[in-house]
Image (cartoon, rainbow, N blue to C red; front, side, top):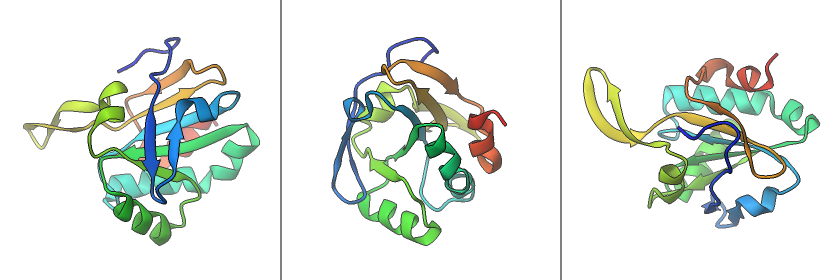
Length: 149
């Protein structure tokens, strides 16, 4: 996991609508960049909905929110529509962003070791520095976990 106080890796990814997003697009703003395993699974849905339910509070504090997974843009579009998500989701099928942010690797699930997306959230400040790094995500309360309330 990347450490607080380090420079966030630059990234370039495509969202559910085919639009490109780069870290530099968020210069001067705070960014919640969250990595999750799979659209429409119970934990990932709970996490996205918690961020959705707190979205206005993020905006009021000057934060943008972006999700990243290896799902396709079409999958992201369905996920966004089904749960009325107000933020963009980047498709990283080549695992470039996931690996740059150390959110892809070995993990244990049900006693088995597999390779996959490691649920991780980074808060990146206005200058592109990692302000917070969360590896133990509370999926049901992630919005509140990030806002510290």
